[in-house]
Image (cartoon, rainbow, N blue to C red; front, top):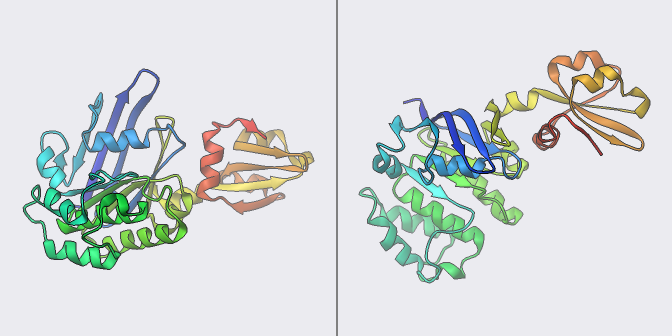
Length: 286
């Protein structure tokens, strides 16, 4: 099996929002970042994958299995980490194991104990006594203890300090090293993507903008800069987005058009810049 996650023409309608025909594939052994402006449908997509919402159309396969008709088998292969913990605050860490382990026939108490030691989590601590970063690690320790093949995280680094974020990204990189595990994580912290992600799926206001390799995504665009007198009609037409200042401008331009503007300053585009410019839907802004 080459793909651990296959999402095809996924759609979901709400009164004020529609997720429309989202398709992407996550191969075995890789990390994919799920990105987009707030309200674009990242969490909705994750909830649909987990069958926490009823979809209006499309298909989702996890480890080759349908996420609805084979839900029990599918969820035995999934590890899930949300931005807030899903354990009772008053549970001790040792009670977390008792509560979760009964659902997984391949649960390993040894692995759980090893992970707690590695993460410096005391078994007698209550969940509410753990920092947000430690609660994240506890959720990951649970997933590792039944050898979840696909780890899904929704904004896992939101609210974490830089040290905790660095530790979490290192854990995810180590998790996929054997080539038998994959990670899908949504985030608005693009620095995390630049460090950890192999693939990117970018959803913009319910529509799929891009899904593919991170390097391909970054290479699609360049930043063009110049003085106000250098902002031509041709550049305005070709730019995906333009930002103007009293002293000049900067524009996001597809790499295929960049040869037309070789007399201007041209720089690589960051993921953050691509999201900012494309989320403006081509409008000029200050």
